[in-house]
Image (cartoon, rainbow, N blue to C red; front, side):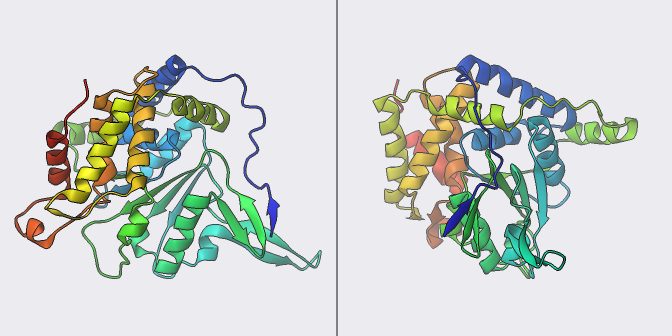
Length: 328
């Protein structure tokens, strides 16, 4: 199998970025997003954490909550190539990855890139996509490359997939199995806006949206930020705290399936990124606690009797956090 460097070559990344620079830059990104998007600050911050941790996210919410608009605005501010895929029941893997097309003039085949060849890809309604295409997309997420006809093509750096799901409609859908959901760093739940937020949305649409959107980064700068986040220090007490949380999910009497070692690694990487975004070069217990629920809410399966009692994964995860001794 041959390899072809079809991703965006970033070349020399320049000098390492400091944690203070990461803090300043991420604060500017969130602030700029707030000029365009009403509310959703926590969601935007978690998506940015995933991006800087080399992870992917699932956004779950009913239609009309501006998931596509939020992703497009986010990509514009980051200076990233953005592609949106509307997944349907007849979506084929070639529709996502690309395919070889015959050129009659030259008598040769050339590769037409699919929409996954972008920095930020919005996979809309992933649960409407047939399992074969879901698997192709999830393989791309893990390997960050596309292999067709014996040729491997690298995807651009950085690379983030935001997959959306509609939790209401279940007809004609193919729900992602737990093993595939586990490949996403976070599962983020979008709720309806508050009364004041909805009034602000209406007002902005009436008077006109801000058109002076600032582009604050580029792919090279984002990779430098990712590298800086990876250097954040982790004490042994924090490592033990992360381990205790995940191991506790495997032994909880209300949980049928607990978190795997991948959950521990995700929580570690996300906590390091959150620390950098807060201007620290070390992780504190608050970083771990703030990201535990969105890390675990799609990785845990409750026992039937717990679900009959009305318990949710979020509540059980919060209970576990309250039971684990927090390092000082």
